[in-house]
Length: 135
Ligand code: AMP
Ligand code: ZN
Image 1 (tube, rainbow, N blue to C red):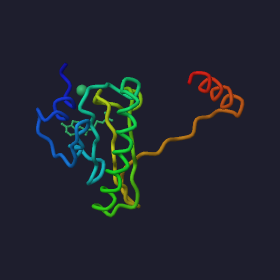
Image 2 (image 1 turned 120 degrees about the vertical axis):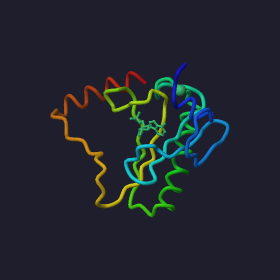
Image 3 (image 1 turned 90 degrees about the horizontal axis):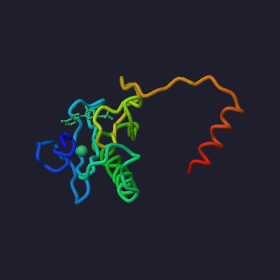
Image 4 (image 1 turned 180 degrees about the vertical axis):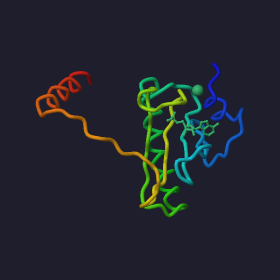
């Protein structure tokens, strides 16, 4: 399979690596939203959160906490976004599961806001029920 993050995670393509263990490589994003933007890459391929194992998902988010703390300490940022995109509609451009750790400053130019969807309390309750029954 021709997956760039598989190649990076497994060391076949060089990257600026800040952390590595048996399951993950954490690299600096090549086109960062802010200075200090890191990406957590599992070494085994999974396209997205639907495909990755629960065990690796848990490890990935535990690692996100560790990286977030290191990013905060090293950049002295005011906040950190943990972002994980699934599917083109959600902004995913590389189809190998990854978690973004993005340092934020009070007046930076990073756009991460979303508008509010026009709906009503019945629709919210109905979709909530549907989600509950899909678990
Ligand atoms: P996403 O839009 O969630 O799929 O994020 C993909 C991210 O991967 C973007 O932030 C890109 O800047 C980053 N990216 C793509 N190619 C590379 C690469 N070769 N090395 C480091 N980061 C990359
Ligand atoms: Zn891959």
